[in-house]
Image (cartoon, rainbow, N blue to C red; front, side, top):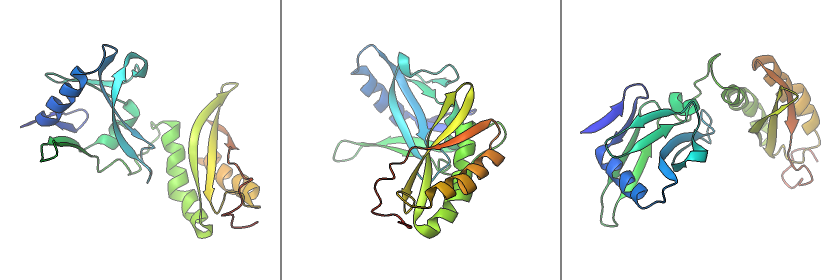
Length: 204
């Protein structure tokens, strides 16, 4: 038997709950429960994470799920990507293993209500990177910074784009143009790549 929160469509089996509760029992009082989130959701680099949750980690918009012996908080931004996620614990000869399966973690699930980070990632991974791949390059979002109440996408180029002599043209005419046209509320784009390393550059 397993328990699932219908709003989240996320399942944590009873064996996984018991295992996580046992881990929490060995932590200090600052640890309030666990927190589930996906790093870089909706991209090929998405990773599903379960971490100890301290007061400093809590966000006001977290979804809170109270199991019998376990308090779980789920990052709101990650909820669409955790649909049909399954957390289980199975004992084996080595002790046991916690497994997390999130089949929708890497799928782009973006609409007008999505966070600006998710909207930027959607454009980068579905429109920009396929073009850059022809030169062995890629670009990823580092963060969305705020300056003078304006949102700025901070990007990092990799592969053949790092140190490339044409990267300024790629940034201005390609990446920045696509992002500003398709992501409402984004004011500017900034490159934080160390372009002094030209070892993999497509154009030197």
